[in-house]
Amino acid sequence: MATDFKSIPIIDIGPLLSKSDDPDMGSDPGVAQVVEQLDLACREAGFFYVKGHGVPDPLVKEVRSIARKFFHLPYEEKLKIKMTPEAGYRGYQRLGENITKGVPDLHEAIDCYTEIKPGRYGALGKPMEGPNQWPQHPPNYKELMEEYISLCTGMIFCPLFTFVCSSELSRKIMRGIGLALGGSPSEFEGDRAGEAFWVTRIIGYPGVPDANGDNKTDNDVGCEAHTDYGLLTLVNQDDDITALQVKNLSGEWISAPPIPGTFVCNIGDMLKIWSNSLYESTLHRVVNNNAKYRVCVAYFYEPNYDAIVEPLDFCIQKSGGVRKLGKSVYGEHLVSKVQTNFA
Ligand SMILES: N=C(N)NCCCC[C@H](N)C(=O)O
Ligand SMILES: O=C(O)CCC(=O)C(=O)O
Ligand SMILES: [Fe+2]
Image (cartoon, rainbow, N blue to C red; front, side, top):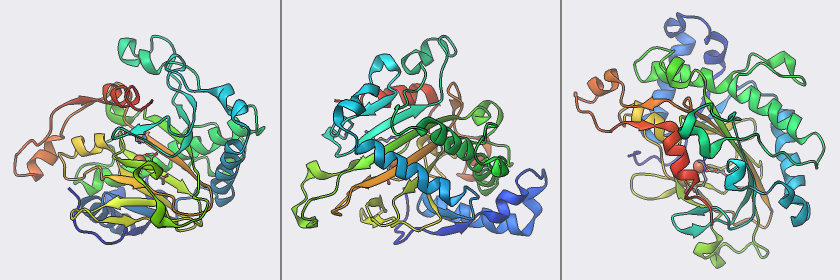
């Protein structure tokens, strides 16, 4: 469990990014400082902001703006890319279609996943197979999102922003987290997350017409309390609305207000297992009490689809030799969530 944190720390990861491909990065004093902050944030809150992340601000804003335009289209237009189990759970879901803790969430979203070719992971991959469904409108939607996703992940195609192609943001943060746990920078590479499966949710949360927060009922929660499923989440949220809340040990909801130029990062369930609960996936929810419609693009960096996840030996040793969690297969965890997430 997280501690009684009252706020979420901000970490400038610039020094980590610039040294991430140096095999001896751990002995760089700038990197060591970032690593220490990551360790503290992961132990105390499971949440932190990153600044100095290198993803160009115009692109970060543009993906939110194009998402807003999509959500404002007529319902019939949005339904052209309706999410279905047959489409590998990829595509558009209407308001109230996503269910968390048995309650319909007050959000609409487009879900996209790393594309899985038929047969790639056998029966394990079957439910998630398929290409993504991208809207025809606004034009350029697919190109922009793929550009963004490629910078968050670290893939090679970057037609629009070639100059920051080396971003590999999530992989580099995970190198820092490997060190923070007391392991090597490459702890989350190879069979673990060398072929990281990414998930992107483009989410819209309606505002409340009279903007009176006291009128809210349970049915007005944008997204009920949940943990994320993989390794690391990068949240790109609207600059002017506070809606994301993180639960601390006493059960208080601590807000994660937007801080322009940053992503909110949080730990997922698979990192909790690998770290033997040294780091935990913290419960969070979204309540949009604002009059305005809120947009968020959540990018999830996850293990290899077929990764077998179990507490790492050095993390067990750090926990006094006690193994706290069992084994999980990431793809099974994802499928079990996805198959119960929808009305
Ligand atoms: N990939 C992620 N994290 N998606 C979060 C979706 C919202 C929570 C989901 N209904 C649930 O109950 O898990
Ligand atoms: O909208 C947000 O700020 C976060 C969304 C979220 O937690 C999720 O989709 O998993
Ligand atoms: Fe989440």
